[in-house]
Image (cartoon, rainbow, N blue to C red; front, side, top):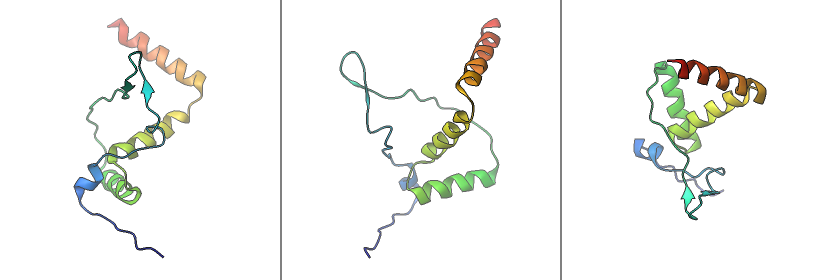
Length: 98
């Protein structure tokens, strides 16, 4: 059995990874590959959850942001398309009233 070479350190958790969804880039009108729009946000979560996120990212050899993306994506997919549309409509109405 071949010996796996594991790298350690925080920089390896933060290095770029390629997901199967990211492997096929979207092409814009000019023929250039589009990157999905990302937003930097701050959230408060329990310390134990942060440790688990880091451990999962380390184990899977992916970025912490990819672990979060997968978790949020799984949560969003737990809603039906109709529920999502209703939520978005309600949210957008409330946001535009201000």
